Image (cartoon, rainbow, N blue to C red; front, side):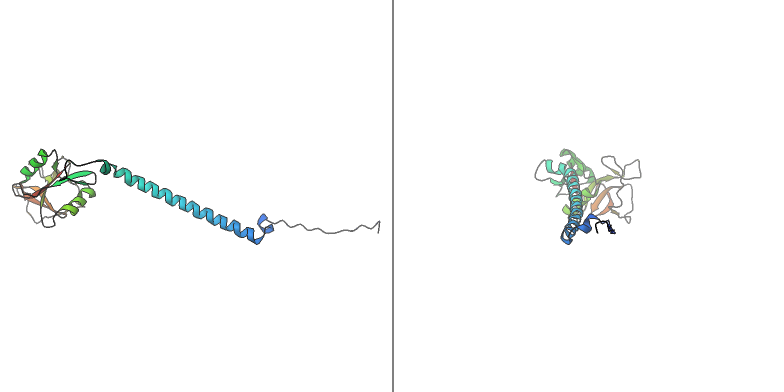
Length: 190
């Protein structure tokens, strides 16, 4: 036997590291992957929440720091509003607002509209800062901006527009053309 040569076949099989590990460590690796994915999703969700909150806080920062002249004024959406309890003509109402260093309400967005919905008596009409100037046919706000919010308002077209009806009154979300000498409550805005 000293001179006998013995041959043997050795077969090698390549396996991945996971196949050499125990079933317990394979399960740990699988759970680790799941935890990493869930953690990543949670971080993204928290990041989105922080961005949304920072946008909301920055858009409302004027509301937080602004104060109205007196307690009769109502702070809403960064603007101050004063609602009259008495009734006057449109011109007298505009003059009353001017004496308060303000103007009749100019409704430019949903925030202004939401003030009307919150603080307006449902059956009352209020003068707003919207008129048809003598030289024009298009409605204009007292700050000289044009009326382009028909998506927020229903316009009462049953009322005929005459030379005497050049001022706008609002009740709810309905604007009606009215004689400027008519008496209504009004809303001032700073």
